[in-house]
View (cartoon, helix red, strand yellow):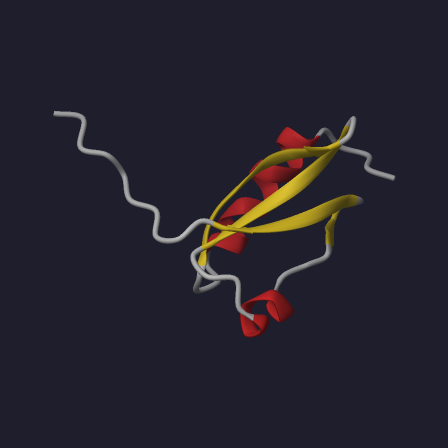
Length: 75
């Protein structure tokens, strides 16, 4: 059972997850009325999936393939 709010858990774990090649972001998702920890990956491949947690501080993890993520030019 999670102890900390998901926003705190995301803030604590995102920097480490982003150091894993292929991880492009994290976020909060929902499964029904329960929050879950999203890990966004460029390509969902077995080798990367094996390196990622299934839960983070009691929150279930969902891995979503997003493709390449690029910042938009705001000019």
